Length: 211
Image (tube, rainbow, N blue to C red; front, side, top):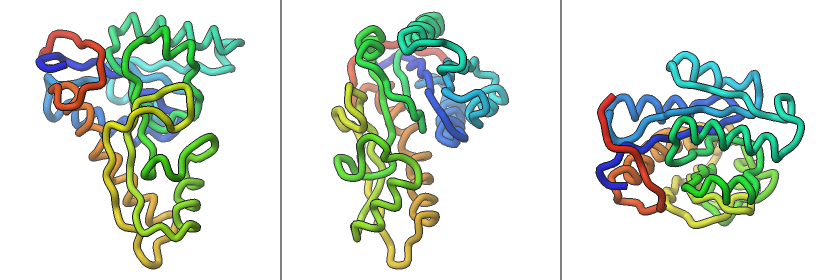
């Protein structure tokens, strides 16, 4: 993707703090990547409000809007094609990405996980559950993993990991806060490295342009 503007779609289910970090980074150094589309799985997701405030097209797609999983997949694929998206960044998106969707999209899909995979991952491991498991295990380190999405939860090739120490006296809240700060730095960094060709995840890109 060297020399290309990377058009990113962010999928989210929650407050959208990673979305804001990605948007801020893209706008502070234009020409590498930009958020072209946001898709949320809940009508009341804070990420939707953040997208609207940033002037980014946003769609709510869920069982409330489309009756079947196939219809939801097709609706998302249609939007991704219309917005010429090169890469999807899952950011607190709590819906499973189907094999059908992965095959039809045919471009990189990234996920960020608040632990050092393969530990503390898998179905149901999200949010506070991850930090509770890390603390209960007695692990001395945790961190962030960014990986390519495949048909399994929290699986697929790892493209980035960074560790932080688990401190004596850490709580779920304190560990979560430090992990989230790392996420906000790591996701934009990885997207820029992909746009610059330093990380090869496959896929294409649009001609680089500022703005």
